[in-house]
Length: 186
Ligand SMILES: Cc1ncc(COP(=O)(O)O)c(C=O)c1O
Image (cartoon, rainbow, N blue to C red; front, side, top):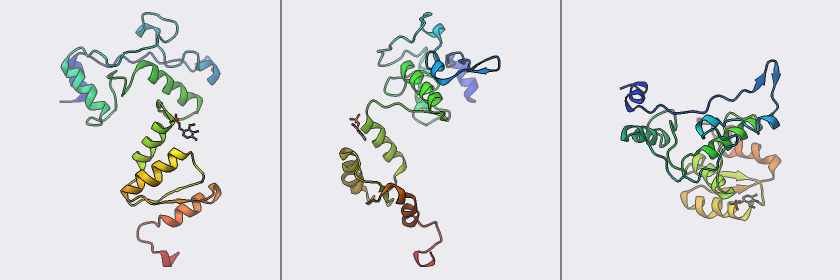
């Protein structure tokens, strides 16, 4: 069954906010102005001019099939990511608006918001570091970050090495030889 058909059958296509304009005529709207309203659609919030604060912990699905589809998207069982609002641990209107605006502000493809600095740092490291990798970083780091890298990741065979920031790239290249090259040939 195609995703489109299933979406139609479950009767709950994702109600996305209407696209926010980023220009008026030939005039490109500045990021500072876009921060006022970008990513928010009053029609999805009873006409409220500004985004209401959503304290909701979980969202209602129109039927079980929609809930299944949304969960599969957000947990990676189905490509394409979250198709709808699910549960505040995954997504929510305020979080999505913040992330959309951060990506505009930073001129980034996308942005993620976390509830704490360590949540962001731990998620980044757990996403990209594999057993056997060497984490090369400048020092000193925030103490909890150093603890996470040395004591927690260290338990999973990810040894650490510190180096001044300027030498970091050169050093990490040396520590991670390209497949098929040997240390002697370099
Ligand atoms: C450089 C740096 N990294 C990480 C953190 C941790 O942030 P949080 O306390 O929000 O987890 C802090 C907090 O001050 C910090 O200054």
